[in-house]
Image (cartoon, rainbow, N blue to C red):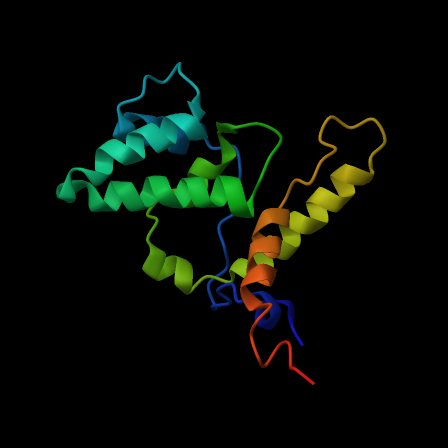
Length: 153
């Protein structure tokens, strides 16, 4: 049984975008949201922006991009802090239709490997449950009552 069939995350044929330092993507995203370039983006700030965007039906595309960034930052590619930096490169041209065609399981497994390696470093500042721990946990909780995955005797 594969990891993808266990957790029910999209396992499409598109390779996932990876978090990376991309100053241009970060600046463009800040410009799109109207945030000055010298101000850090935090998830709490994104929630505020998302509430405002939901009130304007013309902002659906930007709302989905902001929601996608929160999803990626808080559930798939968790980091050490709450600032959004590397994840902005993942939401350039973001859409849930394309996200569904992406091999998200591949990204989750890679992020888990990085998290385990970071966690095992003695004295590292990043010693918690980083990576995709939350995504895996939520996906597992979703399938607990799935008859095919958990047959009742």
